Every structure is written in structure tokens, then in C-alpha cells.
Image (tube, rainbow, N blue to C red; front, side, top):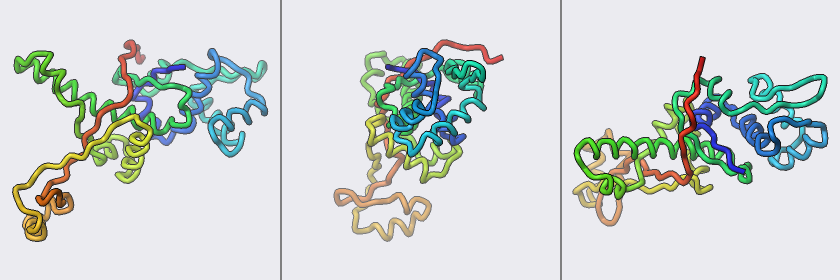
Length: 242
């Protein structure tokens, strides 16, 4: 089953450390039509499906979903109601309509997916911006389509947007890359200086010294890695946020 998850919601979950409850929400969404009973045996089954240590962890995440009103619960009937994604978009005041297609069969890769959705959308945003610029300058659509699908996405920028550490941003990027949700290329800019002069060059350019490397007998400046999305995106319908 495929679900289109708003990219804003993915980034919000990362920033607010809400990834495990979000994963549970998506899993439940993929298992039922919108409502279900969850007894102790069901909790054990879900824990196993999500590779969690115990049903207590599932219950804790379920409680967090109820607190956020992503899931409703009727005490009398014992039925849980899995809310729609548009309600979540209203909750976080979603500004963008871009959503990423997620295969619920890959639920164990969920953290990698939402990281890939966020990163891939950053790369796609640059692609859209480039195409718009090319058209404004009179270049044909055919030429625009032939442009590289790889665009620079800095882990420092990721960390700033998501309000996380740079090391955490790098870990998330690697999870997404290993799962095939993004593709990464090194981005090296040649410096017209032979490799044997690296010490002198770094000393004279201390502001970029940590980004200078040797490559094929020449110095290169290591720029932000280039990213291409490995996820399918589409626009969701516009919703009212009042």
C-alpha cells in the first residue's frame, strides 16, 4: 500500500523527535481502513512488525498519538480512530503541498524514508528553481530537462532547518542513502595548485583549509555533496488551515 506523506510532516517529526509515533501512525494507517481495536495481542503483533522490544513501547507511542489527536480513542467501544493526514497538515500549519510516496511494506525503513523525503525535496526545489530561471532566460524546456538531476544539499543547512546537530543530519543522510531514497555524489572543485603544495595552500587559506583535499595529483575544494532524490513526489490538494 502506498501513502503520500507530506514532506512538511516528515521534517516536523524529525525536528520534534516524533519519528517513532509517526512511524506507528503510518503503520496503523496501512493496516486498517481508519478504525481498529488494539488489544494486548494486537500490541504484540505490532511490536513484532515494527521490530520493537515490547508492546509497552507501542502503547507509549500510541498514547503520544492520542495526545496529539492523530489517533482518537473511544473508551466505551475500545475502538481507535486513525485520523486523516490532512488533519496533521493543519496541526503543523503546513506551508507546502509536496508529498512523498511511501510503500508501507518498507515500514522498517521509515526513518530513512522521512530523511530522504526531506533531503530529496531540497534537491528538487533547486531543480525547479533552476528550470524556472532557464525559462526566464529563454532556454527551451528540452534543454532544462537535460540538466543534471543532482544538486548540492549541505548537512549544515539540513541541521539548521531541522534544528538538529550536524552529526545527526549526517547520520540521517547516510540512512537515506543506504536505503536508496537519495543518491549522493561527491562535489569537488579543482584548484589550480599541485598536490605537493597542499600545506602552503592551506596555510595561506585557513578559512577553507579543512575542505581542501588531494585528488588525482591536484588540489580540490570539497563542496557540499550533490543529491538526487530516489523518491517519487507529488503535490497534495490545498487545504484550509483555519
